[in-house]
Image 1 (cartoon, one colour):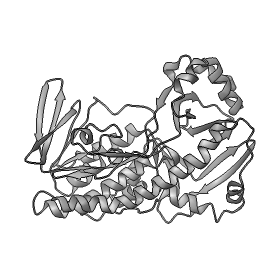
Image 2 (tube, rainbow, N blue to C red):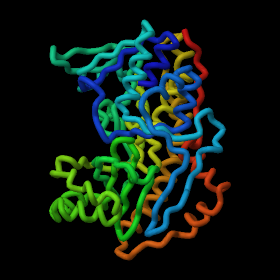
Image 3 (cartoon, rainbow, N blue to C red):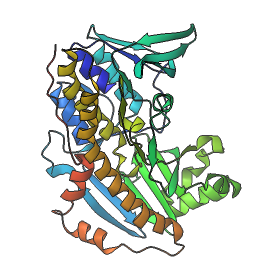
Image 4 (tube, rainbow, N blue to C red):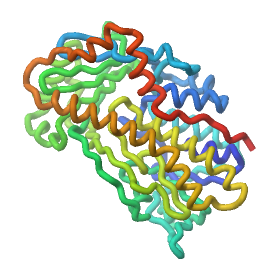
Length: 387
């Protein structure tokens, strides 16, 4: 949606195909970082965006064992917004779609499920899609696959992903938020369990981290056992754990970390999770995807003025975005394998490791993880002008 907005803003004819009738799907990436907020500022959209219901987080806290520590402080970032924003992804998508509709070159077609690519003479010439009214084809100078980690576009185009692995999955659910609850988003790790709580104002969005492939085993122990484990880790939730009535209230995120070796073919480019599925660590996935979209527009808009972008232009996008992708995934994999895996495999009560204690004691050091999470390794800025 961001790529479409930027391209249409620059005068490029764009059609967005969306499989569903709306954007209302829960437990998607809802964390909007300062790097993305800075892009909205550069587009003149930030003030209106921040009028939407949201929560702001200026510091990141973690509870390990019985000790709570501050591990990141965003208030010193050199951006207009020195905080993270929590907002349902459907609100963000609706916001971008409504703003994009002001451009005569933008079109959004809902309930249009992509089923394949049109390939002729070694070039992707467009996409095939299915609607309630029947199948149809879209011919295009360029098709952009932005359809997530289970991308149909990249599969049908024969692009190969390198799997990097993940030791965990996440079970997501929500519980009501009450007066007197902690007033911050935080994570809790102890005795083989990790829980992340995201403040959604009226409710908590909760991620319960489990070992990879352990969802069925967790369910076999029963919902009461699951609820009791949650109450042990977060005692303040004890009075509302019965809000989890059945396993249907719990959604499984199968964590995957991968990236395409090549993000493109003639006439096709993949960005976001279609090009590189990210771990949920740090909530950086949506923001890395936004940076991909900005780089795509910056590089390709001048090319469109001379005709369909060639293979070298698509390679330029991948080359621009490969370093931050590799660096972010390397950092995530290090945390997964050296921290999360160890926590999930231990049955003893945890004590705060010395790096976390050091962060907690040093406000200056807290700026480092804030920079890595909030800004990333190569932030992009909008350079293409409005048509």
